[in-house]
Length: 537
Image 1 (spheres, rainbow, N blue to C red):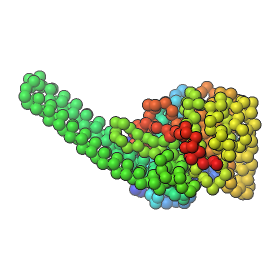
Image 2 (tube, one colour):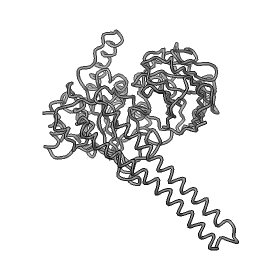
Image 3 (spheres, helix red, strand yellow):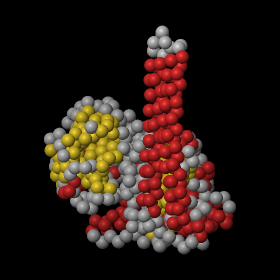
Image 4 (cartoon, rainbow, N blue to C red):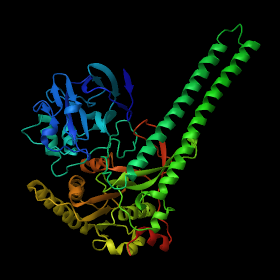
């Protein structure tokens, strides 16, 4: 049986998969059948004790069974969930340690141990997802301190009294008006990079140039090569320690020439193994560097480097935007573009103590958002209470939806206008009269949450759920509020993709959990270069 680590994935070779879980606390097991945006198609795609079956997915005593060939053809994944049993006494530490188990064609295949650290009472343990014509399994371990209600709402399930346990009803009442999107999952205390084939951000549409998919495939190759190098180094050092200990274990021979020769031989074996691993990794890196250089000449501007000739060519649509480069100095010169899908259905949160210090980062994000969808008009709503982005106002004037908001008293009205537009779009969607948005809307909310009313946080939370109906991308700038005492603000922060602006903050890839550093893209200060990249004139 394979012992999975968070982010690790594997190919499923059978056609019947069974999921079960055990913990010290009483558990309920359930499943969600989701589309590419990681939201259910309708409430029938939530399988739980009051609704035990949907196409290809069945709940029976002790677990969930998935018949892969019978899962609806337009489904992207099945999320396998555990939550606290509402009939059992509440646990002070949430669910505690959980062990998720998976069997394929009745053969025990994989096990994933999860230890929540923040009192979570609901977890996405595993994800069974499509990759081309195959099905794969990913270890997720994504926790929700707000419980099952938050998890369900994040994935498009309407929480109501008729279909959910008592604990879900209680949590739903607490969340009225907030409607969060998916939690990035910080049960391990680590920031995990997510993208089109990883937990936290749904797969982007790939019909436009396939650029995002290509870059993430390169990133996955780099991550696996890095993990192999790290593993080889660790193994070499562990074996060296064991062999050195053995060489000196006998007091009668520890100072003899034979013992010295044994120590030297052990060191040579260690050095040879590390040298071979580093050589293999360097070869992988050189091949990926060449592949990235070739791709950079073909990618649309929003995914290309600032030096790419794409910025001088005709506007080209894209399925994603580039945020910066990932690297690890101890693993060589390879630098991987870090890219995410657009529109930003999972908002960006730029972590910073000073909005002014983040201006070049914000400018770069806006430039790439503008370049990603040249066929539609882009409208930017900017909240800038400290005037940090005044230097961007001139170049962005053609796309600004009114003057930037610099007075906190004007925030609510601007946000409410967006909320009402999203509400109308949702009504149209529910009635079958929905048409795709003709505009790409961008909300830039700086200095959050200082100066914002509590109701403003609820409005932004609503937009995180319904904003895709009006083509909205949301960018928040402020300090990380994931541990805020304000529940709505904390939930907002947890629901976003965080971009650290402080050097030395590690991110962890979703395939192997290897650590990477992130250099964020910065918009150049020179007006001529800004005009070239912002392309608003």
